[in-house]
Image 1: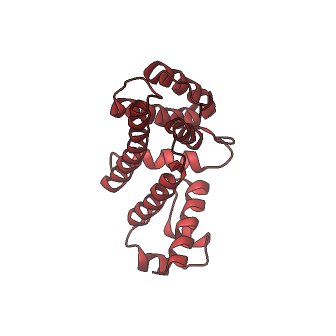
Image 2: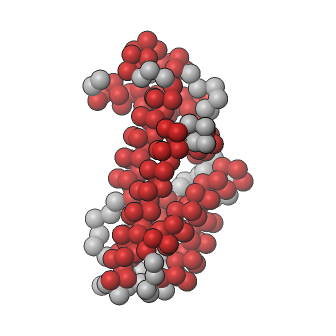
Amino acid sequence: MDAETRSEILEATNRALCEHGYADLTVQRIADESSVTSAAIHYHFDTKEELLNAFLDDLIERFESKLSCEASDPRTRLDAVLDAVFSRKDPGADGFPVAIMELKAQAPYHELFRDRFLDFDGVMRGVVADIVRDGVEAGHFDEADPEEVARLVTTMSNGAHARAVALGEHPAETRRVVEDALELHLGWTPASGVDE
């Protein structure tokens, strides 16, 4: 399948998932959101789960790109990660956060989904652990276990997503809590400036 067709199908999947939710998502509804027929979608993806797996793979790639920061200073990189994870316009503005929560709820029943969410977790934990490791080595952060700090930040970001979807809480509330935890564990508050 060419990249343009794949991109169109995945974008249509996103729109249909946001509009109809997981339970009411059908290949026909995805086709209705694109110029690709349902037969063509079935030609490229045998099942809805296979299509959603490709959708999540694409989402992971975009998330990884969003987390990357070219800065060499680990404090700036950590701030960029927090910006990427916690700075959202309005968590209720579209159906995307709800759609992702619905897919997460399917993970216990669909190994493909569980694997993709484990991949999300691994990407986030890896990026944060590398930043913490670099910050400790450079003397910007207090001595800390990079893996444990990464697990904490990832767990709190997942909690922020759940709170935003289920309770309507803005992710900035959780970001504040994460920053307090990072100050306790690393001796540095994000967004407090970088001394060059």
